[in-house]
Length: 416
Image 1 (tube, helix red, strand yellow):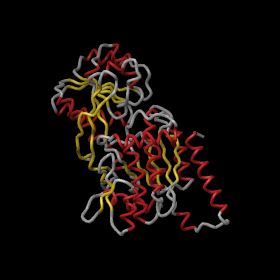
Image 2 (cartoon, helix red, strand yellow):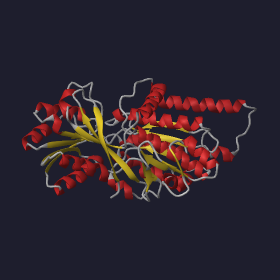
Image 3 (tube, one colour):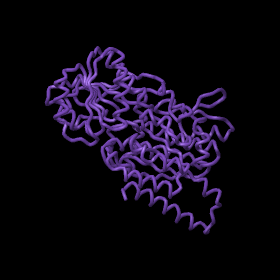
Image 4 (cartoon, one colour):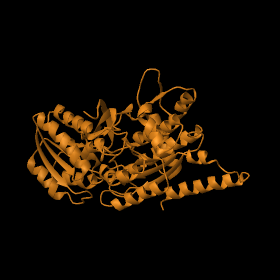
């Protein structure tokens, strides 16, 4: 059991003991059923584990704020954080999904990787549990037969791939190498970017590698031999092996383009300076310093560590808030009840009150008003497939320290 889960279990046991001491009162069944139970299935291990800190921070920040406001339907929200592993360890995600079903949770937040979600979505949504991913981007998940129980707060790669490719064309690149992870995530993003680049007149060469690859010498040699103007790297943690290999083969760091799976702080790496001028894309609008401070404080509180990256922290926070607001609007915390209101609370409309946190939503709902949640990642606005139709992609640029800064934010529809 992880340290995170030990804290959750300890908290639940303490709460149960406290209840038992109050005159041994029996909790009405209706009240017990109305507890919003959330289980996160995120990469605590594996190729995406380096992205879990901001997700952990977003989960805790949202739940703490919700409970501080009085909870959902008058009860405190419970949170259990479990491991998803990665594409090479799908049994880990399956065990976590089985736990979610057996424990009767109402909402699952995750998985982070599209391929991992594919392996557990039927088990979760088939049990009428709402599943909201903060970072799934594979286009085919839009039409998955999930009974309407699957949602995501990150836009599909139909948007990120298009914006990434357009940026490369705007930068005047005429030929592009795409080095991509041979998974649903990598193939999907590669296909979209390649299609836009080709349509824009650029020549494209592609090189696939398996998830968790550690030796990129051969791939770097092939890219160097291709002599293209730009190189897109679509990866997870494999980037830390690929980038130094690119450098050793003379591939210009300033011509490298990264994506959400590897757009991180490289300042501690020996090749940090190599990335000066490199660019990358990441779903979501600019994260404010104030919100970053809140995420950092939450991570410090629960993990006693410094939060260095914020990728998908806002999307995770928004996923939890949307689920809680939907449960409050429905007057019930069950999966079917949340599903019935989740799209409605994400959409703007005449007479609706726009809110950016649970406390404001709770106040409006108690006053008999309908709400529209606009998140820190964007307006969200779910369509019939659970996709966020109104979305943003940020374009970032690296400096000689290995850190990136936001250059601009491009708005777009994630499903067209």
